[in-house]
Image (cartoon, rainbow, N blue to C red; front, side, top):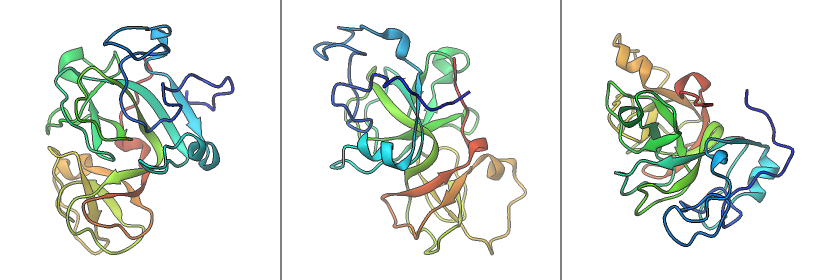
Length: 216
């Protein structure tokens, strides 16, 4: 069960959740795999209010909001990650979803969303990082979302058109007929909070049923 942490859990070398990937847990970030003082912290979750999330935000990167954040590791093949993109459990490598390993690649058959990337990565392979798994998140939108608040948000590049093989989201207008395909139901991500802007992260209230929890 997710619960608010009361023991000031270790965060990262920077002190912020959204400062990007790092190579060691709880130690000096000097070389890959070095200084792993607290390896058991991989997979830990922390619960933040808006106030505590703001304190944990590197504002030059973006503002974090209330929600649940989890410490994960990028799969070896991960090269680049965009801030706000969806990330997925690396199920092929792990034969399920243990080991808290994520990737930026989704397919229609292994669309097990883990959460949302908090910072851009240019060489994310094997790095540790925090992602958001519940709450109000800044999620990367595709082109031309509907200019309205409170719209359904789906995994897609274009509005009203679900696409399970991308890592971006878009709006699904209230007046649009719901497709009869199972893929459409799998594409639901949440509800947008405020009028979204194309091709940048926008605030979304994450649907708890849209992300697969991994609690070890």
